[in-house]
Amino acid sequence: MEKAEIIAGTKWSIDPSHSEIGFRVKHLMITNVKGVFKEFTADILADDDDFTNARVVVRINPSSIDTGDTQRDAHLRSADFFDAENHPEIRFTATSLEQSGHKGAFVMTGDLDIRGNSRKISLDVIFEGLMKDPWGNRKAGFSVTGKINRKDWGLNWNAALEAGGMLVSDEVRITCEVQLVMS
Image 1 (cartoon, one colour):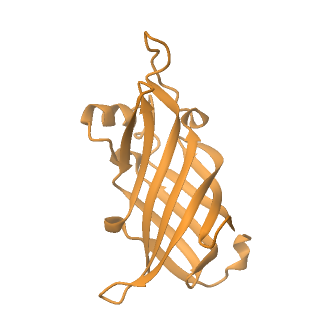
Image 2 (cartoon, rainbow, N blue to C red):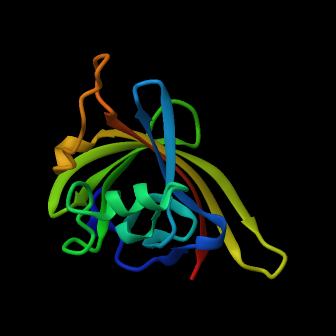
């Protein structure tokens, strides 16, 4: 998609009470630890309800991480991982959205910035549909998944296990359920 194609359009924003930005990572190489970010926003400019050429910018507050364990969350906010004090924003800026496979399935490519490091990633996107809520607000739903290697962004902390392997896997699986509302 060529960003200059959209001159005027419809503004959409993320509905945080009906959306979740989450992740999963292997712990001890045998189980998954899940977490979510509680604070995030998104600015989307689309051609009405056609998101093919949409401009998308998502901002996440890394200090809002919640894995259900306050000690682990504090460690993830520290310089060992997100260094949230010095890098208060994770940002994803989409650069393209291309149909893949069946109708409603897309690959969204963009730049993910964590800790001041920017890398291009691709995410699988399923367009779940459009709907008006009981109050007349136009909504759009998306499921977004993908995986990244955390070390590409300098999130290198780990510990070797006595039996072999590492405490935390390098691969992080991204899982998002997103509901947009027309602004």
